[in-house]
Length: 474
Image (cartoon, rainbow, N blue to C red; front, side, top):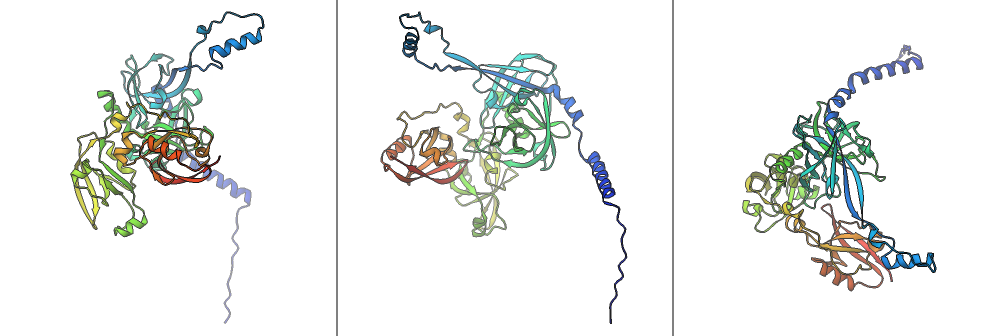
């Protein structure tokens, strides 16, 4: 028996006609899907400000007084000019530009801490071309936020939105002064949430919103709007190999900012709670060992002695799944949420222990970061060693909160350290496989290193430990 198939030819439009139909459909969809930001920009531009700062910095003379005098004698043989050494300025002024925005009709302005920290003069330029000298109400380095005040009234201001409601893929718009180009708008989407980025506190209190909005130098401190015209983020950082936008930018969530603003207006400082645990990620192996359905939560490596966690009954090897109703998917979520509450707050902690869930109540202590901003770094005075970097005593924050002992790199020059990929801010916890607890330990071990060959250095960077090899040479 033979099976005969009848194939009927299907008439297709010519290729040009298909292309026209396709482009027509795409154009129609674009008109109905893509947002128009014109009204949002027009409504909110009056609330945006440009912030210019001036800092007095020490001017470096190319020669000291004696060298300058000798040089002039050589240039003018037989004629010794009268030198006005005192007339040479010892300071010069350095300017910088950032962004910010009005958050109240009576002149409160929000921006980044790094935009205004250390400035001797701060000028705020409004969209209507008025310029005001700004008073610093408070600075908060852990969140990189600063609150300023202008002597003005009846000003337009933004409305805050709920950053927790933001979804990956949402459209967002930034307005600021990239490279000093005031009141520039740039649009994009939310790329990710809950990001931790380099350069933060050892006890990571920040969980950024990542976007692909074109953020550049000068955008720092400006607002990130949702399509409803509400501020859901404050533009803070970018990841870039060139210093310009690579399409990866990070914004401080608005819910964090509102908490910081409330405390800065109230007291000029921000107080954060302390749980008192050393923790790490729950990976696949730990999840299997402790019979969890999937890896999640914060694994407690160690409960600090006399800490709020110990008082609440949290134990080593507990896994924290929720903190005060906030789900903990990654261990970095825990310090972020703890930091949103003030010392003395009573919170519920959901833990996983021995295959069962249990809820404990904890009263938060006071984080060392509440005072660490006022501490001056104590750089070691020993000569620069042949490793090519200098170190300082580790502050109380990582020692008390993260349970880390070591020293922090504060200056890096050409040498084995730079060649091994070390950077300023790295915490050295061991050198040549010997633990380091102080700058004195570091100096003593450094003096005993061999003249040549390789030695190991164990560092902590952004909460992650790694070992590098230092190549020593004569």
